Length: 363
Length: 205
Image (cartoon, rainbow over all chains, first blue to last red; front, side, top):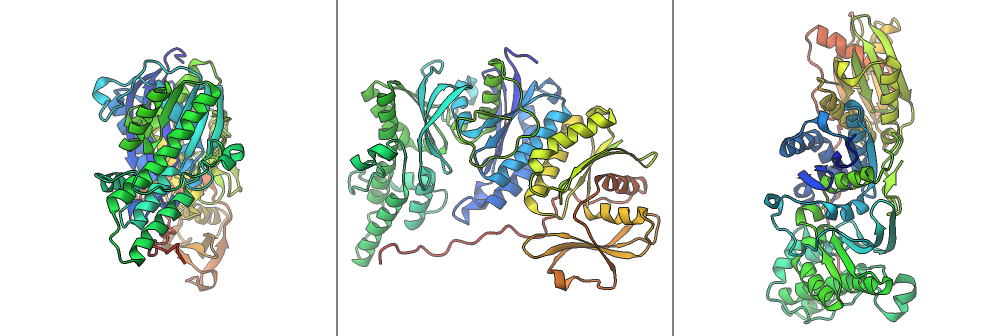
């Protein structure tokens, strides 16, 4: 195997995206994503069985397409990387089964990796200019460690301290109830907006006053400081929005949709960025990396950029195609493990829906 | 030689030589909960025991079910990517065909209904005529309550495991006879379990 610059194919199936990506060392070659989001829309959220069925159908076409986009063949691949967890168990198992058999068929090693650490791994990728549609406005050269990483999606809201990508990742905090993306979905629904909620809330918030309504910032009171300094909670926020809207409706008053959407979004963004920057300050780490699908939200990026600059924190945001779930980030983490000299995983690993971030590689 | 993978019940991996009808390697477990964990090891062990490299096989036979979904998908995903990776044709089969062939090999020539667990107090069934040289599926696969099984005149064969080697040999027989195999779609026979969202619930009392 080419240890200095390995050609790695990564497979990601932890939620509703079938991702297959190919990297050579730190260079992104292809990033195929087949999403089953449309199939979930009418249910108002991801249905695990629907997602798992879609992964099974999308898997081999996605592999074929990723190879074609990268201009490489399977016999050139040095190793397979796959998400072992965390995520939806039935969805993860499709990727695990597919990856193991593919590795055996091409007689190459396999690396089972952590999905959340993969989101951080996305940042090491150098992206050819042509592939940077919707790219980050911030690029500060090569990633430096330690860094704080804030990963925000429909399934996760986690704050990590990454001292080393392949050997030392610590969970500082995570959501104790809903993920931030889930809160967007639920509030969109109570405002009569479709799924997924993030872009809908964004649209509705145009022209709204983010300070019109002071919605609660979960786990941000002094009494939360001890036990939940870096944890998140969005369930109470969702209920607060519902109560506020109901009060207006009961009084037969018009609900100011733009103000509600903007104020809700501001509450989410405020608590996310405040906690992330507090971690930067407390740990003396002037670097913050954002990842996860919620980073697609323009207001998240805007507030993060402004407040990180104020705090003297260097902000990194990978291109959006690498922020949402994808196989390239899994391949990138696999390549990093190989380049650091880590041995491959055995064949006995499974899908671990609650895999802790400290388990960067499994098996 | 043909490789067979079935995870519609436990996990069964077999390598057979259709020219002699011999079973070259067989690795299986009746465990119905750990398909993703065991599939790689069983495949590696079967290949090693047979002393063949993936690309020198002639095809991959896969049980498309019916069977409990989560496990079933592991085998189908594995078979598809193995075939892709090794550049082999994929031969999808109804999993219960293997059980029918096992009965035939044991010398039976009657009509049987193969019954496997579908969880949620239901069973999957398939009806076979064993009177010819090879079993012929004449009805099913279907899904039923255990007390509402059709074809009560057929001899009932309850199967907790799918013999992968018989699945491969059944596929070889169909291929040799130019008969159609199963379609390359998982046999779920049940829609995803989803509840449509109800109306928006009030939070204020």
